[in-house]
Length: 168
Image (cartoon, rainbow, N blue to C red; front, side):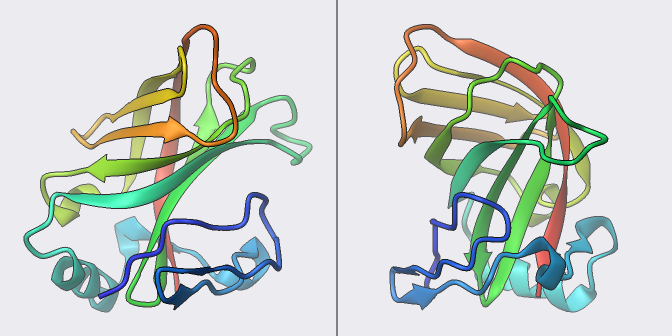
């Protein structure tokens, strides 16, 4: 089994990277056909359960992005993802604070059961000081990691909300 943990740094990028013997598919929102994990097919759920059987963590990439959508302009969006068995599992949403600095990190997602990796949830966390990132998701999932693009001289706490999707 191969798990990939890197992806293009902007939505819609056509860049392909080979990471740990896997090749990413295009991550364009228009082409990805995301499926809400609340209504995910039994096939996707069983595939994820089988792939993650016996595990309680998975390596992810987390990044914050400036919104370009006219409705949400001025807000900071975030997403994190992992690719498993040819499918990309993504949790994305918006921070409530508008002054969260942009960052990208390699991190570990800690969970108790695969059932926690579906639905919509609130998040709370902090980036910095230094390169540390810590995030709690309201259903007991946590993320710990290290920023890859910068260090922060002070901590930046944040809250927000996001939802799981899977791209086939």
